[in-house]
Length: 222
Image (cartoon, rainbow, N blue to C red; front, side, top):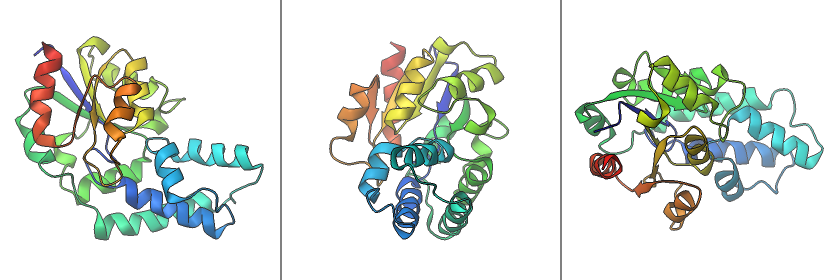
């Protein structure tokens, strides 16, 4: 296997959190008078995008401020949902433990949310201490910065890295970093055309289940 490092997105890949987080974003937006940003819109446009970039885009598009307390209000509600409702994607832990290569997480989530998600789902030990948040780099996904940062931290050339991502932004970031990317479509937020969208934006292959990941890695390696 030519890959030395397997880089995992977290939300929607390791843990089934995208619908939870996007639901809170959409509800809080509606409460503040931004009703055009429905749950469907937030899922389609901002999955995989950092909260800071998401907020900046909405404010730029509407010419209105979300309010200084928007991020804090969302983070508080998301934290409670993660504690009570979050589940890992089926078989993620078992498959990760079986892979004979280094692993890390590179996520758009804030560090506290990322740590909570991995802790409550029992996946943190698979990666610690190699858990990287987009706050570590100047530009989040779809820029390649975070994936290149992760590869550099583990002293691995980009061409020996494979990324698993569920979002268009993440796929674009991986390809811009010069890495192979597996598109993951097993999250609750993924619709019937999700695999096609990921392939259109550069995913080398797609999988719907974690049990399909080892075979996908083999295909890309060959």
